[in-house]
Length: 170
Image (cartoon, rainbow, N blue to C red; front, side, top):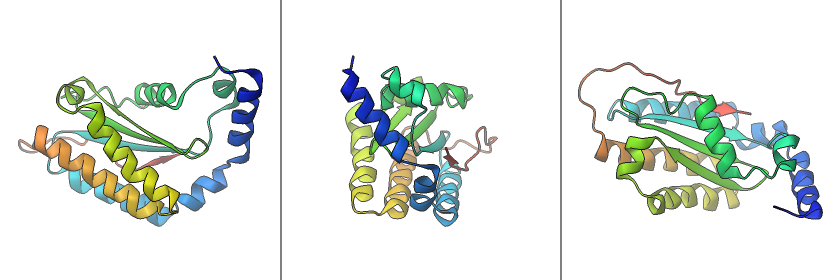
């Protein structure tokens, strides 16, 4: 568990990161481009991909020492990414205040794709974000995830789109 001063420092970092910061990093054009990349990719595989950008976590989560990984897992469940027909859902979670990206895959995905591979995708984003390039690095990461899903879960005919392709900006 974090010390009081560590929690206060983290809470301050989240408090200083606003929804406006999220909109600046991910303007409508970027969100539309990400949605288009998700839609195009899902035509080639059986996976379902969601991208959630959270500028900052709620104060109670910070105070309770919730990690970005724990937050990603909670959002994975809350947004039903686990509830797809082929158990091939993938969540890309971006936390701007923490400068972290987490990828959560459903059970069938995790049987085929290891954490080191996901960490490489996360680095694509975090390294791009460090240069202020949210648009291109997000699209590149979505394309990497689509390629992995296409490799392990290729499309096998028409299927319903089970989750919205529109990114969520919190």
